[in-house]
Image (cartoon, rainbow, N blue to C red):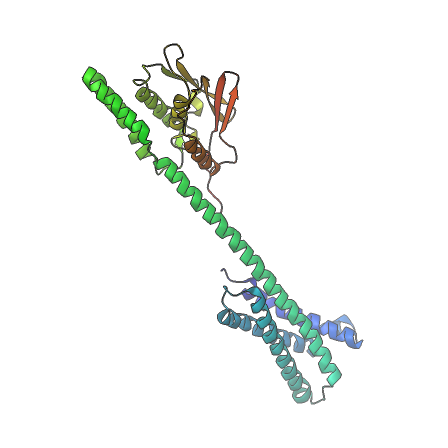
Length: 347
């Protein structure tokens, strides 16, 4: 826990004179002995009260440290407040009795009356309780802030973990399907097999190279999506087309790594693709969103991975309050992905 405000040098320096002045004015009000303001604030009685204020507040400072040792932070605040109050009031009574005896009996060589002494005790008791209240208010505020900060840090670490897991994820089904296509091409055409192998390595190299990056450019994502389409096309007899309608000025803006490959693969797995029903995926821009559009011809039993879409949504929630939106309008399906700008996080 950071140092409490009551331990700050400015509080220790300037609060005691204020307490002393308030105690002195309350004493004058109690006994109805107001003089001119000049006489009040230049009198040695005021200096006496300020001295008492320093002794009491400095004593409270060291008592707080003592209680922190006796009852560490894991103890309930109620027990700390009880012990602190008892010790503080005992200290106040002792300081008031000792300083009053010295000032009146020894220094002024007069007698301090019981009524005056009780008045002093009442005033300083109230001020001591105010000091304790100020300390525990600051303590509770600091604990609430630490609790909120710890919760936010935990949520941020959890999101970091999810984003990292999302970025590092390799879809085994895609790998198996690609290897099957590669084996088939090896038996048909070695040159096509070499080209396919290069595309396969490009797709997984992209996943591995970007796994520790928070964001990547749209240009990198569209290239990765294009490579993925090339991987999938042998399985679907070349009936998948990716058309990029994005203006060049947005290609350097950013997305979460793997966004377009995951959405393209999801679209492929949830739609019927054939020579009669080819799949064309369009990439376009709408305000601050990248739009992925396709003609909807949904399978009776979709092979999509909703869990990966949920993790994609969680990954975007780390960077923006704008969600990834899926919209189905008539025979068309749209995914709207917020375009991101990497901002430094405030703690």
